[in-house]
Every structure is written in C-alpha cells, then in structure tokens.
Image 1 (cartoon, rainbow, N blue to C red):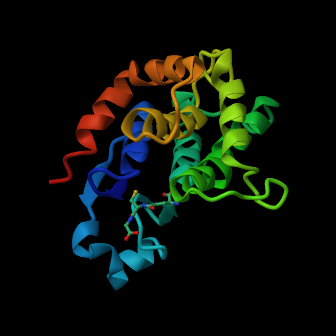
Image 2: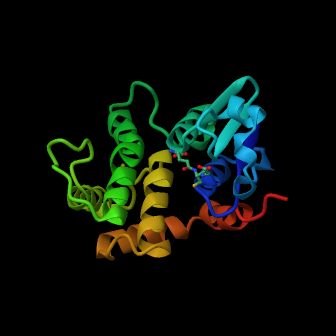
Length: 199
Ligand SMILES: N[C@@H](CCC(=O)N[C@@H](CS)C(=O)NCC(=O)O)C(=O)O
C-alpha cells in the first residue's frame, strides 16, 4: 500500500487514518511545491493532481474522506466503521461526507469573506456548519458516542486545522474538548511526525 503525499497538507489525515488502522504502508513524496503532481504518472493516480492519494494493489483512491472510508472498510479489525447493516452507519457516512460537502466549502466562505444564500449553497453557511459541528461533537466523546470512527479522523482533522492551526474558527468549549481528545490519540501524535517526513 502506498500513500502519496507531501508535508503540511491534508496528507496528514490519511497518515492518521493509516496509523489508526495499524496498516503497513509506504509514504511516497509528491513534491507539490515543485510541480510533481502535474506529471502523467501522477495524473493516472489522481486526476485532480492533488495529495493525498492511496494505491492499494489495483485500487486507486483520492479525496481524503474517501481514503479514510476505504481504509476503515479495508481494515475491519480496527473497528473504525459501523458494519454495513448497522443503523449507525448512516450517521457515520453523513459525517464522512459532511467534511467535503459542508465543512470545507464553509471554510472557503469564511476565508473569502463572502455572504452566501444558505438556501442556495449546499453547505448552508459557515455559521450553520459550525453549529451543526458543535452539536455533533458536544456530547462526545466521539461523533458516534463511545465509538471512535474514521469520521472522527476526518471531522477531527478539519476542526484541528480550523481552530488550532489557522484562525478560521473561534474556539468553543465543545470544539476544544473534542480536539484535545483527538490529539491525545497515539495515532494522531505519530501522524503529526510521520506526515512531515516523506524522505
Ligand atoms: N478535496 C481534496 C483536496 C486535496 C488538496 O487540495 N490537496 C492540496 C494539499 S492540502 C494539494 O494537493 N495542492 C496541490 C495542488 O493543488 O497543486 C481532498 O480532500 O483530498
């Protein structure tokens, strides 16, 4: 299994997930600052020419949420996803998709300082997304209660990015407590180090 990535990118989320799974994998640097993502070879792995991307035998997966979902199913013994007939799988999938469809666009809304019509924008608006996130992580410890899943890797990474690394989200007690729980996981700690070293 090969993870294509680069330092200081969303690749850290995929590394965190791989570490949660206890997977054996190789980290392959894509020098995105030098343009290495725009080669025909890498385009064949991820046509968006972005990192991260995962190659597992014949399987090729890009989009961080999809990589996390794939890995959770690929390593069922790690118990990072409700099984297919478990009703909790509905909420799990909702949170996994919520990141790419709502959290990320809402961050862009904030960065660009634009106002959107919440009925037209698929993500509602930034304020609504934050309120839904707060409600989701509020009771804790995880999005599905006592059960830590791949959805926490994805949502936890987004909140860590928005609250702790960049000043995109004003701190709220529920966010801080949830981020602290994520940061206390040994896989999270390992990922922060590993994802900086792609030599
Ligand atoms: N929607 C993608 C976004 C991936 C993305 O934007 N990656 C950035 C780094 S965090 C990248 O590869 N940038 C290089 C480029 O676009 O040339 C995901 O969730 O994986």
